[in-house]
Length: 581
Image (tube, rainbow, N blue to C red; front, top):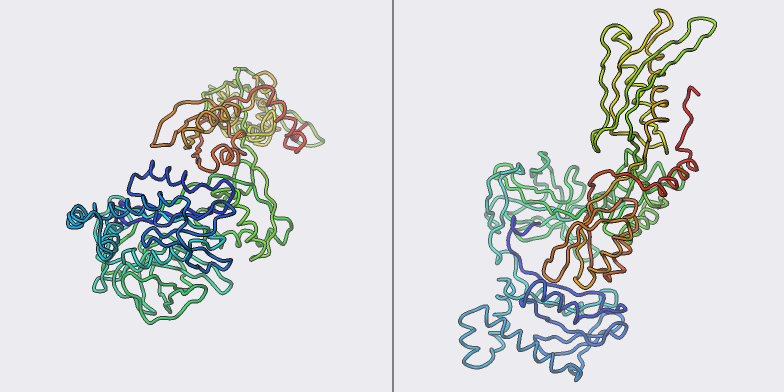
């Protein structure tokens, strides 16, 4: 949930994967300080590094712990290596705690330090007031540092009532009145859904109760979707198990099963006292893959299985690209997508293949031409006859297709003129060079002729197609490719390599900005060159960079690349011979 719309909450920062190669807690901590300021102070410091990361120093109590393979801690002497930095961090922590309270500051100046009870009490207050942001060193895979982290959450993190009222709106409508809802059992019930789990027996909805008391079988309103939801039994989650409870109070986290219309990000509240909490805005997909089922059986199950995973994972995007006719799966990273594919196989028994999505190329013309399209076919009975004269001319990028009837008189009867347009539209949809839609051109119907017996709607459609084919031979058709507006955010020391890489992808750098220790590089890059960019960006920045990409415009494909695209289209069978030939 966006803090400015809900409430200012304290933060814990966890530096994970310190057992991995090239993991560097010191460099990460310095980057945190540069970005978030001096409020970031380590609560635990690592003992060892990379594969040798085996324990942590508790800076609060000045004790050291090493962990076995099961994550069980055993106290060890404080390491002599880096002892000066450990003492310095402890003193800095005391100073930050003292700064959060005037009384403690006086005691600190008088005694040069704080008593244990003053220190611990002040620490909790400093964290709650966001004066202090604790930083923890852990490895979740090896369970190193996890116990001190969990203990610190229990001992120092404020409970919900200590954070003040929650901000929301009276309705989900834009511009709705902002209101505050105290964390209190005496208020009307209101809860925010923050996660959805789909199991074999149904869907489990996890929600945070912000106010009021919610009882089993209560009926609440899903304000965003305008429907009533009957909750049924209420549970609390205990590890992998759930335990049934009679009621939930303000501040509790509960689980409810089999809700019909409620999903992650929804607000459930009392109909007589409404409140709407702004949902989390998840980032757009950073990488896309085209996804295909391996068999017909997989095809039948794929859509339903992915939609269930989407319920659990709002960062996943599954959609059909109308231009390329492919189904695309988008996510935060390649690893994210691979995890989804593994879940499809293991949980839903659906096997799929992934490949790079096709680029939605288009085509257009560059010259103005006047052509005639004449269709005449005689059989034993009634024949076919349609004749039209048209002017084809290019339009600016993004204009689409325009058709203008410029015939004065009855050269072609009015009822058959739309058939000429339909024939040209059908032919343009098939393309002229590589089977991609032809766009950004205008056709003026200026003349023609007809036969009183043999002419009909189909005849003039076929005449329009022939006019299109003749025009293409003279109008200098070219391929167009989508060009994306790209913004890359990365450490400043990587900016040179990023610009060099974007230039190698036929990108045009349009600007640069600074944001703290990060550099923002803006560029225009063809979509075809960005399909493999996430992996390259991770390599250049050691996974410290991110990027945003959105469509900008279509531009002409260079000649040498257009030839390769045409050859590939021929191999794929995209170029089809016209039905009348």
